Amino acid sequence: MTARVRILMALAASISLLGCAAGAPKPQWATAADMPELATFGWATQGSAERPLTILDTQVRTALAAQLTRKGYAESADAPDFRMSYELVTYEKNRSSNPVRIGIGVGTWGGHVGGSVGTSVGLGGSEDPKVRAQLQIHAVATESNREVWTGTTTTFGPGPDAATVERAVAGVMQGFPQRGR
Image (cartoon, rainbow, N blue to C red; front, side, top):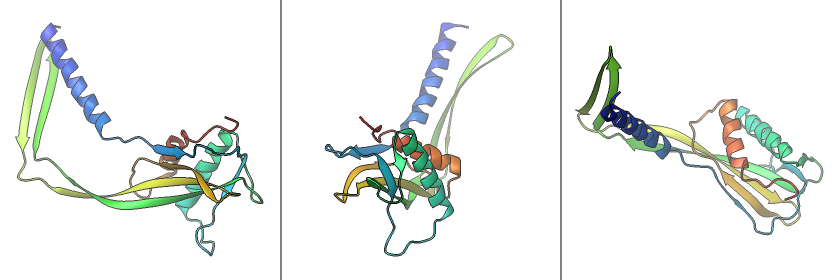
């Protein structure tokens, strides 16, 4: 392989990696500076009347309980040190697609090496409405009734499966403090 082909292949790989990495925001979280020593968790009630748990509620609670248990916290229904709550925020995101597309290709066939660059122009951009969701998780100290931790997931499509919910919760809960630290 010639040096020119290696350079073209490295350039194509770099461009594709940059394209993949650019669109994925990271989970975010914030911890109160004086977060007290907490050992047990429970669940905050949503509103005055307990509403039935949806499938998504069950998936989120299961994933949250597993993450908190791994971090050394125990669930308590009677008198938890803090209560967990969460909300799923949905919004519609209109994404305009760029009508100009550029493609780069490098390949070999039978000892010959070739490269190409192609462009295409569509007839105007298109609006692509997408419903997106974001999971916001909160921990509130029971005694002081004060939020001590909050985290937000990256966006995902509505109606996610259990594996997607587990990954989203695990990503956010990376920022939740390990018990005893």
